[in-house]
Image (cartoon, rainbow, N blue to C red; front, side):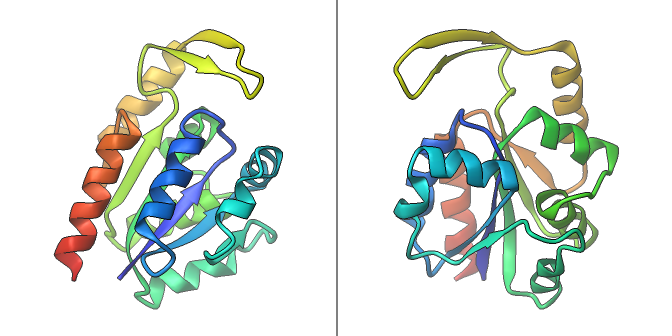
Length: 176
């Protein structure tokens, strides 16, 4: 079965995730992107790097793409990178866009869900496209939301893209 890979509007970890997706290949991964993700990906020309993949964009409030989950097309849902806004919606049970609806339905189907939150560590160094570096600290509310997310049934959190890639690869190997 394939991986349904959700991309949110986070710049942090995005380049790493695009690289992982490309290493896995279009036969193993379909991509689902939020509206914010599309903006960021176009800014960095990442859409071109994923031209061989099926990419589903968030265009409808009803998210008809969820039926692909019920059809059994996917064996794993990955949300990477996941913004603090998306994580907050996950833990509050809000399903108001493609990514949050896919997450909710995957959970109801007891499908394994892997999440790479951008705010998993207390502080990070973020480098902008122009090369400027910023130190960013996690807010208390983000830490609490990540803790709540880690306690959700079927959800596994990752601190780094490398850990995520290792587990996705293992999951795909046992699925074959």
